[in-house]
Image 1 (cartoon, rainbow, N blue to C red):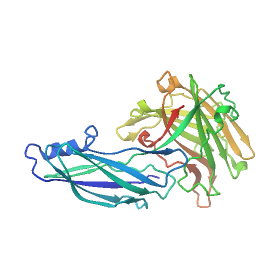
Image 2 (cartoon, rainbow, N blue to C red):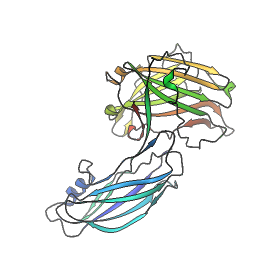
Image 3 (cartoon, rainbow, N blue to C red):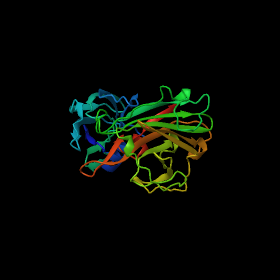
Length: 339
């Protein structure tokens, strides 16, 4: 479930730009390298989304003449995010100077993955551009010392305090949905994924694919899906990892073609080890992915998103799921930083 808002910036020249064409000015204002309009990142701890706060917009006039600016927030999806002020009156930024604008936001859901469409429209000397406020959740990745034995039991010291409950798009207090906790650890060789799924109906856990059969998971069984990549490789695609309640693995590399995510290339077998343990409360597990599977030889910052799917269905035939807002674009993932 994605949520969109459009921040429209009306850019009006105080005097004519005789030396510049309208298309050139439009390109210059929308080019991220010029940083003409940019939000400073709003960061907060993973699993504790800030429901209200401030975001800062820095406006830089790249031209040799004054630049007139007016702003207005326009909802694009019907989701009741609130930004104040909703309208910024017309003001002028002197040539080659910058100006700072502050906005207060209020978020209705346990998420801050807001996207704003980027759009540039050139029309005479009137230029429109939309930009993206940047919210990012951060999760510490703990050093595994001593090293982790991948047996599915979260009993190593590094897991203490490392597990976090992500945001649920349906609200974290709904009793009919799974409660999932996730965490990461690392050593010089591997990135480790740890998770605990507390299921209100553990007797209903469905396992179809035997753990010996790789890349064969079906949509009809309980599993967790992780999207992962290193920060430096985020532009090329993401690694997709599915871990079932029965110990089966399905992993592949999802390449990007423009803004489109292609089908996973299942020849990428990044998960070197995976083990899961069932209990009276659900199931928990551990997985190890060598750093070299991410095309790096050492511990690095990782970006991730995850989704938990249950094989149960409600009375209307919809599948129960506990998840973060579903997204395959690394720009909106949470950040895991090795300590």
